[in-house]
View (cartoon, one colour):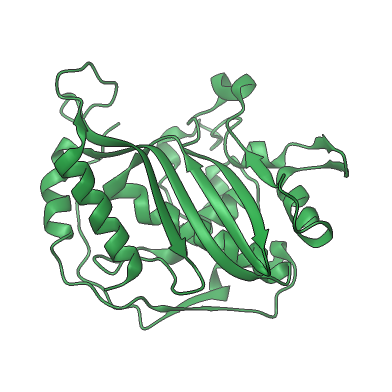
Length: 276
């Protein structure tokens, strides 16, 4: 069993067995038939992934790593807020007729800020600091800009990264205000694990830990039977992540520069109902 599978199984069991249900509350999300989409949740979930030991991708079901990387590059490398720059269609429902999701995600990372080191965006500031002051304790990004929330097609769920170098290892803390565990958990974990790998490579560092902090980790009511079946499946050893290490510029990475070797999984889950 991979460590990522064990963490996921333990988290889901904790939510299902000891979580708080919204059944008697008025909730915003709804199912396609109009009925309220209730959840069972745990507050303040913290999961730790040692990236030096394995790449934390689920084997209980396949995660589309190529699509996940394409999205993280769309946000952090292209710094785009237009879905036309993304190869998948998963953001289309939050975009306007021109494809824009407003002042959200990549837009915030692309904003120029007057840092003490000079005027640059948040991504370039992290890259600059990793090369010039790697033991800084100030390497924090934040895309939950309250002034711009009204102009966002979707307010960010994964909103902050804190980077920290210990010895020669790059660690990161991902803060997430809310997460649909079945749909998004491993998607986000693999994305930000890849981001740490990329930043480490171009900074001459090794990878350390990804710490994932989720304020509201929830499983929707119609997802509970799916999750119960999922966490009983056979698990496999984690695959090996192969990265093109000839790249020394973060902006040169492409989806094709990442390969999973020996990625064995159980079958995919199809037709997962999505609350809106």
